[in-house]
Image 1 (spheres, rainbow, N blue to C red):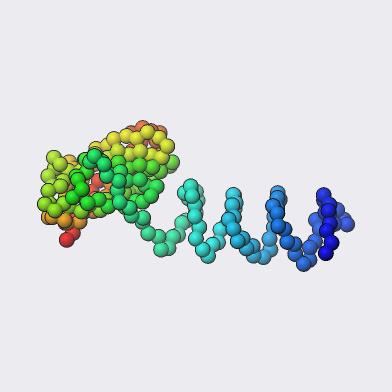
Image 2 (cartoon, one colour; image 1 turned 90 degrees about the horizontal axis):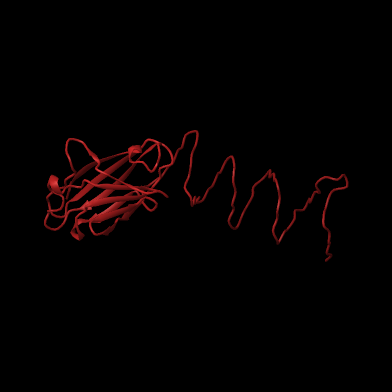
Length: 214
């Protein structure tokens, strides 16, 4: 077997050489452009920017999110991720980087503040966060207006947060079923108008519930 040591390979006409039987490269390949008329198989990780189309038969992981700036988006088989809310000192923290649905057993304690963190406030939008709250063993958590769920703190990604009294249709607070261990769905809707994401005036927060599932 021969070894060829050169700095540059060009064709006789000065253009790109042709390797009719292919080429095997064991090191790093650096190129400014590339064109493939057939399939490309990558056994490891492929990192790329500014591509026109992506057609994957497997899983695509977007570690920093997905931004769709035009056209229509069609997603089949999409599911919302559920997680247990982090509870401490009557504050139920819901990190929207990990889920959009959060569970909490009120036997562990009532919810004084719902803290929604890492909320994506990059453009005008409407988002929902759902709480699945299980009533305590005596059916006494959040059953009257004075003790209803009425405070939400909203902390967008990378900026300081604000505290809101959410808008409630036909009431002042959200109350839950008085039946022991009943399941309650509480939905918090957040409208961001695209303004300054540190200003409370850029947001409206709504809250509603549907409960007494036994």
